Image (cartoon, rainbow, N blue to C red; front, side, top):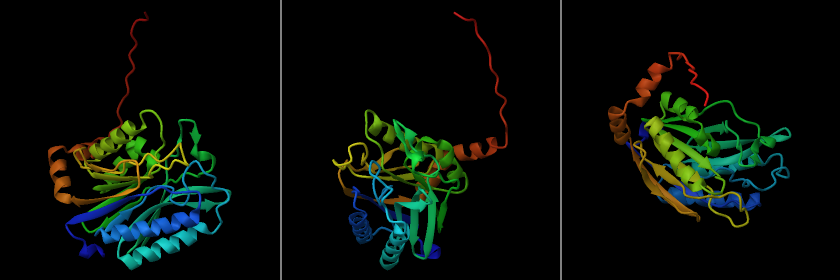
Length: 280
């Protein structure tokens, strides 16, 4: 699927799987999911964050060369299937790891390391994970994909940076934490980021796994550039196949040109005024 052969619409399969503690099982599960997505006619198959081993489990005993083994296996499978695979893995970096989104297949090999680490709700991702510093865009003909991982969703600037550099489709892989209000926050944040950027947003989350009670919200979804949820899965493992049309992006951006205004305003440094009222 070269850039010149890209169709005017893009078919993406979100494969909502539940990773387990066994990386061997998880790798085979991922390969099966890629095959399933390709069989569904997808150009791009997206898997969740932390497919190698889910959050809430120990990473330290992962073999030192496991990231390269996964990379080779996923890349080879994607090449054979003629798709682009997007899979959340961990890469060892000395005594720590990076939380990485691997983008591979069709002569592509790129990575995005999570920039905003999940130090919230009593969890401390930065204890084991080294944060990334760079954003990633993938150009496929008229489509431009920008990437994010889970907690990045709470930081609008990350997504605006992607959109202002050309992204019209935002890809999010997640292993969203469970708890009161977390599903509502997931839906709110995905819709808000799509609206901020007037872009499609597709988000693939880990499915519910009773053995990992703190993570695995599921509810992978696709959001239109106007903020409407096009389709959404439940909490169990499943597949969501969506077709994206750039005509929808162009129409929304014509009616609501927030990106154009945002680009202009970035050249300004606003003056902040503080006023003080009477104490009561």
